[in-house]
Amino acid sequence: MPKPEIMICLYAYYPFANANTNVMLPLIKKLSEQYQVHIVTKNNTNLAPKDEIIDGIHVHRYKSPNKLKRIIFALGILDKKKDRGFLINLIIKIASPIAVFFQRFPVFQHGEYKLTKKLLAANDYAFIMST
Picture 1 (cartoon, rainbow, N blue to C red):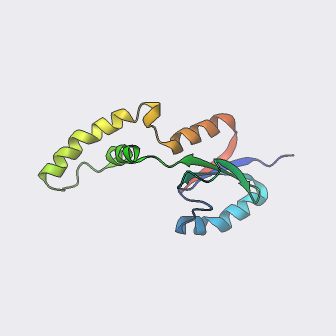
Picture 2: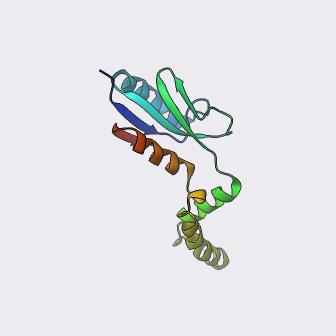
Picture 3: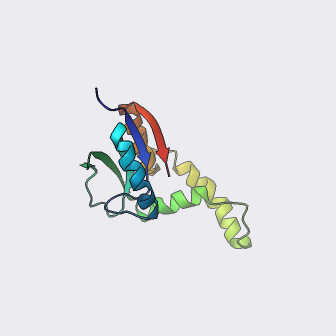
């Protein structure tokens, strides 16, 4: 009988590990004993394989966004109530709704969102964890 599948969303995973990854590794190893683990992570250099299996763990990487997309994503989540001075606040209040509008179109949607949505449609996960 195959193991049930789970998804873990990590910002960084091998070969681009960070402190969150290091904290999660023992948990991932333990979970992999009972579950088929799928990791969704960022491909920092866009040079690592898109999909691979490392020590029995399925790693799915989404492309690192280009500079324009990073700006759009950042503007979309900025706190508009924070005081940054009149001019900066004005720019943010105008640019943020525009950035949110652009994110409705698939070309400007975050790679993590698109990959997660695709994997959820293709697999039946017992549960999902996100850090």
